[in-house]
Image (cartoon, rainbow, N blue to C red; front, side):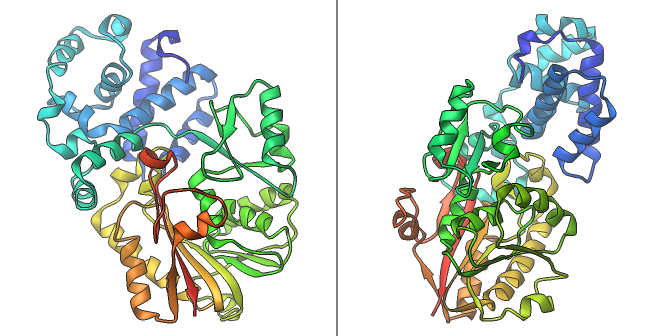
Length: 424
């Protein structure tokens, strides 16, 4: 994002941020899709203006409750935007003078007197009440403060090197030669973290399939599954195929890798990525549900199955801050039922001695331990393996115990949960 001091604030620029925020707050669709559509409809906006508008509305989504408290008795899109700029981005009244009315100047004086430490904890932490209550039961107060603070920061940009094409050292050397700040990720042997967020869609390393964009935490799920050459493997909820491509490369494009998903649109996004990857062992399959006959035909035949279950996504709030305002206790309860059903169906594919990995990008115990504990209680043929030992056996020194729990404050990744199980 351009520095705020480089932006010349005009009524029109502020109005664009207001309009986009108003659309985001009333839209049933994900924030990233709403923002993309808005910019397609307003092609007259320059690069810097778009960056300013997007970052401003995302700042509001991250801090909506505390900013609403600053708005006092009139919570409008305009006041939320102004609050984000002043209390979030550190601008002063003089810098915003060209766009402020006299009444807004008076409001700002009163807004500055609001003390966040006197607000309820859920408001101060910018969480809906139900989510605060769920998390406060899982984390100590200081831990929760650190976790929420990290979730309210913008996420870095991570790449995964495609070992079918090249090695990490070669990619780092190429990036450094271009003046791109990049370094090896702390945990993933295939990960690279960029210092900035350059456009990669036309970069040669992206176009030839040498790298893919993938959070470091997501990459570690592949190392928990640990697929081998020649095995039969399934990515049960493949989506657009980020983890599928990782698994295929780990298998050296040998064996058979099924990419199951219920959404044709998501699988369609996998096709160009698969073409770039150079993999020949991936078989995308659209299914009607987890109980599709195409799935049942593979019962007891697969060596390894990954279930990256559809979830609340609350571990990805750095990227998708709107999710915390979209979910409710009822939607979480519906998800846990679906997750349990998917895990049971996927488990039927695993042959004796095979491995099953259940994962989510959620922070909630109900979607994580609750689902796994319920599954293990009803399926004694599956025994848990230590996630920490599986990773350390591959030279990955992440601080994981029986189950993998990643958070941005401790690991610098998105929030992930994963359990490794083996069929006796």
